[in-house]
Image 1 (cartoon, one colour):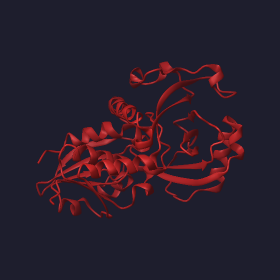
Image 2: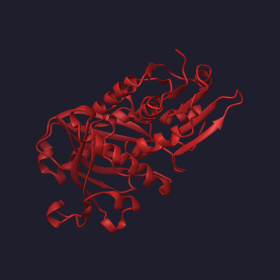
Image 3: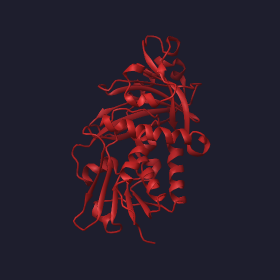
Image 4: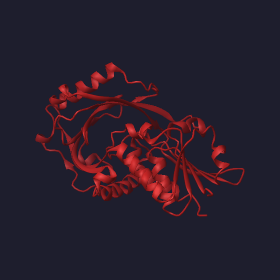
Amino acid sequence: MGVDVIVVGGGVSGLVTAVVLAERGLRVRVWTREEATETTSSVAGGLWWPYRIEPKELVGEWSTATLRVYEEFAERPGETGVRLVAGVMEGSRRSGLGPWSARLDGVRDARADELPPGHMEGVWARVPLVDMPAHLGWLRQRLEAAGGTVELRAVASFAEAAATARTVVNCAGLAARELVPDEGLVPVRGQLVVVENPGVEEWFVSADGASSETTYLLPQPGRLILGGTAEEGHQRTEPDPATAAAIVARCARIRPEVAGARVLAHRVGLRPARPAGVRIAAEHRPDGGLLVHNYGHGGAGVTVAWGCARAAAALVPDR
């Protein structure tokens, strides 16, 4: 069978972009150097919230488009891995959120009894919380149902993919730094701790955009995710024990019962951040083919996945 499009990258951005293209009738193949469960997307906490991502004038539309899709998916959580869960974004007020918040039903300033001791303000909202390993598996099934395929294959250059398909879509995440090349793409290291859930039902996030430390508790099926870090420029993929202990300590100040929770796993992911903003653009190759870029989502790839995928797919011609 011929191939119309090669999507390079098998994380959430690559799989969603491939799904959009395959369901449009194109013959799509995803080339990924690792299984979806080994990607940075699989490590992600999975909370929908526009966070550390540019350009702001486009992020709202991408985020809202993705929100609407997840709201539909949340009607089938056991199948899709997406649920709508209530929680608090500490340190914010409703009036300080971006224009995107006007499209978020029920968002409001948190009441005093909804905030941990010592915290003065926050925003309460019911938003999508995505069980990433389950969701990535479901996306692959949806892609295959549309006729697409996934192939484990490391890519040294986009020319390799261009030899197979006239259109190549770059969803390579941090690997785009060398493949494009784009020196403006930087790793932002995120470490988290997975524990048995001692009864936490609502999510909580306290994040300072200027700090390398964040505090979050994200209840996922069968586990609780504790975080985290945002260490710009750091590329260590091994969990650091001292960092893990600090994460648990910060989260225990929010929910004391977390301190004694049994640790199930430690996780590290390198977010592909691009201070200049997400890049969605098309380049005509000298050989007559097309290279479409969709990368630089930082820690918000889950939040903008469908909006960005549709924007990138709009640059891909039909057969």
